[in-house]
Length: 175
Image: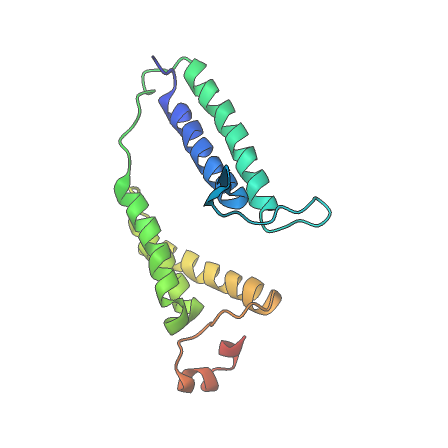
């Protein structure tokens, strides 16, 4: 089996796998009387249940994945069509930064945790950008998220460290 454009082919396979996972987790799997994976209530388009959006998103991802994989299989690749080196280091830094964000959000607040998230994930970028640019991006992202999620949507996300002296002395920490 000769794949014409491996990048597209494997991207399509990745979309298919993620789509199947979304659909299975949303809907669940039953085998006879046994429930192998418990799902959520589907609902209807008028009264959507918790499984409705992830299930249909999963099906759309599967459809796009099939289209992309078939296109990648059929397309004639050029000299650079060989599958490139997989960047595990970049994936580790990005996933690690998300895990760190989740662990430190409550104790240090979103302002600091968001800056740490952007800076740590930027370390995984093979084409390093200047630290000044990364810090400006981090601050801009944190301000945007604070405006949208804490003040706009009124979500209970802590902005500042979980220290009473800081919480009481800085007015915007309480959201």
